Length: 593
Image (spheres, rainbow, N blue to C red):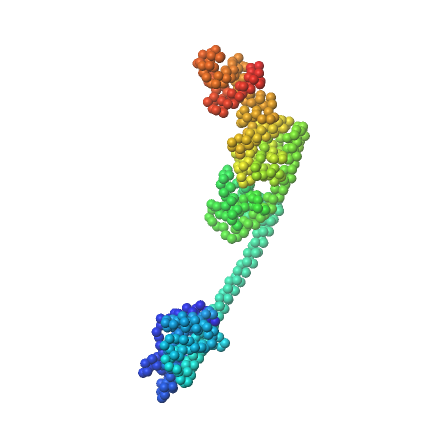
């Protein structure tokens, strides 16, 4: 078989015009100069000597292409012949020689291929005799030599031509054999080199497996020791020499082992944290972000936290990556266990929260809250959460619980048919819980309602209604998604079903309480002045006439009202709430009485 190198070598000598040694006969071949010159007494004997010299030159030729060129150049040694074309078998195809004639190249080539390895006649214009002669080795076709003659060759000339063809085929066979031998030697060398590389890789793999088993055993022991996340980060720091840390999915630090811990630890940016989680989740392994090598802790697709190594000098290698991966696996098991415990605790909290929302006695509530690890003493808030793409099932309740814990809310949690309820000891931040839940749920289409502060256990059911009203007002407003606080609703808190005398009194006290107390202490009429001002549509002259006072006196009283109440009459929201409060004070609550 002739490979691609045979083909390139075949064409390497396409521009060579070398010939056999020349004697007194011009292009005729002579014997080797090292031996005594043979004297040919007949033309046949002389032709035979030239063919012998040609054969020697062919066996000394550097490649197959040169062998075929010599045969084509010196075909005249066999008789009145011309070499019309030559072909070599390369890669299963007959490749024409660069020295072929161009006039009938396509037609000759097509005819040669039709012969399919057999000798046969070829038609060439102006040549009465033309034959395609196969150059054959042992059981294989090596090429073709297409020979023409202007006259029909004699028997002796055909015999000499057959000898030239046999010698050329023999030289080609030897050249092909030498090439195969060289290629086989190169292939054998390549295989030996490949085997050596594979052996080295096998040794390396065995060593890596031993290291991997040791790392796995060390981190598994750390996870089983009961030391939690700190035990795992301590083991990872010992293996890599780099500071190791664990954050929750919101970017808050849970554990740090090693030097360089920032104090205080920076507060996470929710948007940047979310972008980072998505960037790492898209990759198959750890991702370098800044000076940290980060991987996610997510046992079943859900992200439970972030494990990172601080690598300021970019020293991490494949062993570091291996240790980081095993540490993430160990932490996934640890955090999953902690989450299962949290689910049990959540069920206990749900039972207590259900009883608090429907009403229960204080001694029992305090005892059960203490057993559940929640301090029910002090002020509490009721928080109602609803999300458009989530049903209020256990999964959503757990999501709300995680988000609340992540933003630092100490709470009891339960769920209702279409919302989740939190009873928390801290006033929720205006945006923190909403943003955390938006990240958890992948959408911002959620609403949160927060009650006014509650100072007594038996008042929790009433404040639950406040939170629901805040949620309902928000859902029916222009900006229906976000957080609403009951004590910021203004006069909307007294609208809708469920509002009663207590809500009216609370609303009036909030907006007019300072003025009512001032009037009581100083026997003044600030509230009445404000009410008359609104009744007159804010007209100074009409208001002054109705109160039988001077315009400047009215201006002075209005300024005092601003100072005492802390509300600005120029603010549209304050003005509306003050006007509603004066109407409720005057009509529903009976005015000064």
